[in-house]
Image (cartoon, rainbow, N blue to C red):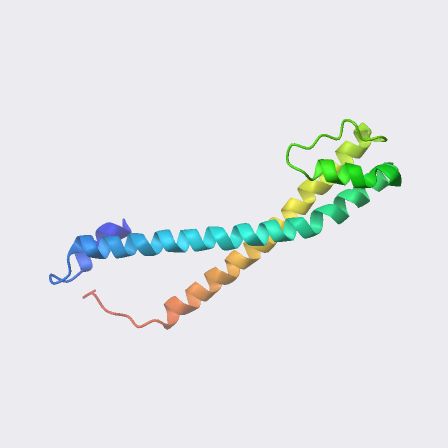
Amino acid sequence: MCSVWLQIQVSDHTPSGFATGILSGFRLFGGSVGTSVYTTIFQREAAKLLPGRVSAAAATAGLPNSSMKQFLTQILRPGGSVAGVPGVTQAVLQATTLAIKESYISAFKLVWYTSAAFGGLTLVAALLSKDVGFGY
């Protein structure tokens, strides 16, 4: 819809294809930068939260301290298996699964807050920008 509006509004001296290409380029660039920023924030925050929360949940559920390092290495590694770790019970797995989910939720909250801040800045910029007046 925005592309159609843009093509109608550009002057006769500007090719509509050029204007649409610029619009699409900015959208792609913004999406790429946004995805990179949000992914970095999420991964960094999750990496900080996961070890502490998972180890606390595992210890509370009864995992022996002697197995903690091996357990954390396996459960936080993609494709890792905790089957051979001594002391792992169903209660430990349930507690750590919940801790992992809560860690990811907390990490995603930071992404959401960052997105809200960018949205607020965008709104302020839109309110402060000059109306170019397209004859309406």
